[in-house]
Image (cartoon, rainbow, N blue to C red; front, side):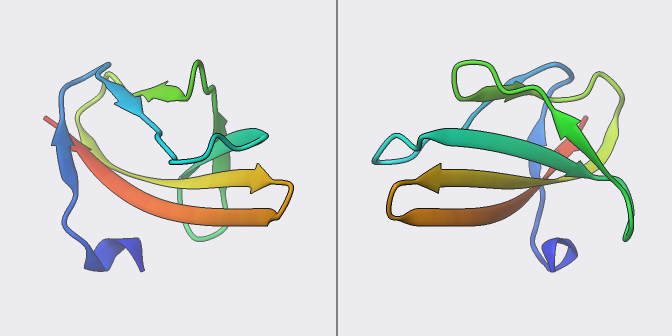
Length: 79
């Protein structure tokens, strides 16, 4: 699914802000490594850092509110 979309180009270690109109109770971010493996990414003040290594990366954002939760997928290319 994420491979169908154009990646956003970012710099190594660039801050990526995760912004919602209404602040969720929790935000978790996973990096999709391959079809079966993910890695948890540290979220600080609703932001993550892009990797230092150049390449293409896919992330899954899991946000939770009292009314329910949502998953968003996005991809980046570090150049």
